[in-house]
Length: 307
Image 1: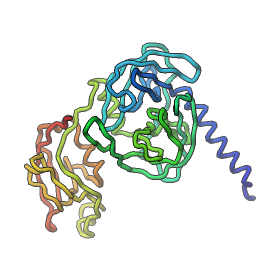
Image 2: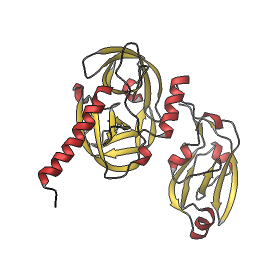
Image 3: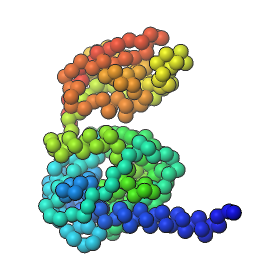
Image 4: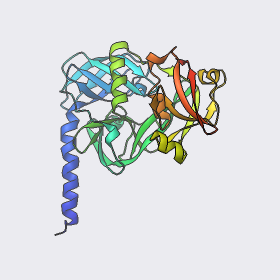
């Protein structure tokens, strides 16, 4: 027995409406002196998650929830490199949304975006995961940085959606929407183990200290023999070493194929970035590379990323 088109549409509609019903109460429209956007309640003690570019340099604002209640908030901390910020409401908030794991997403999976595009709070759009692991450049003052590991979706996002929820079919928040790119794409910062670590650091310290190596790389396959010996199919090919940086001082070279950083296997630029948190600043960090067919250990001392 085949499912009719109307039944299939009803099933899709039911899935989207179910997610919207469960997620919308946890998403706020946020107003700040120099703009606004959306935010997601992620902790029952009144903590909300949004984009760093939504808060900018502002420290206080007001959150308005789907039921019309309002709460003033203060900005506890922001991390421009991940485009995440944590807010603390100074009044009652809804219960926390359920956070999922974006690392389990697959291309083609249903996702639902909830936010306040153009000031219309509680707006819902739906689509699928179009791609994973994207990187988008963003400008911060005169500097350009890259937000890594972004989710791409065809769910429509507009200004005001930034900071809102991207949820899976189970109603779990797997991303924080960002309209910062302006490319006509739906993009979201993933909620995963790395994100949770950033959130915890923002809660405690108000900022995320990051280590800096000074390399630019692209994913590249390992030779068959090395892959068989290491059980690792790919690494990161170094295409540029920043002159005078820690990697340069350590002797890393363009053309090196990075296998591990801090003895952890890496497969892409995000894998390297995950090793570059505060605890490795000023320490000797082992970087294993494949160079001229031989595996070589290089020891770099990361500095703190500033600016």
